[in-house]
Length: 154
Image (cartoon, rainbow, N blue to C red; front, side):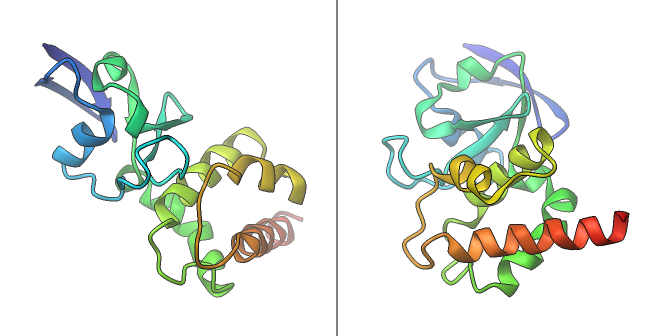
């Protein structure tokens, strides 16, 4: 079957098998930040943004993305760079494996809610599995980024 979608700002038309996962599709297009983790939609490593909403690509057929706009971390480097440094400063990227999923969900959160509370941050990121740092470093990093952003604006 043939699909057309926008991937990281570029229109793509491709022939795929009907059962191809979005995860495999984006990785075949060089988007290696999207990782295969649990394959049960429980860890968040495969998170992409489809029409601005976080989607677990390990449980989404590529055919479902036809006609939609899909972004991976490769397409959002500038936006991610702003706050990823703050997360790293808090030691929250010990092994780095979960970072792309956290970054994608944080981008979606901050687009939806530019001034979230700590509880809102925790709730939004709850679907991301991190075995190294226990989420507190990510929370501190996001909070430090938001506090610095407020200082600059205020």
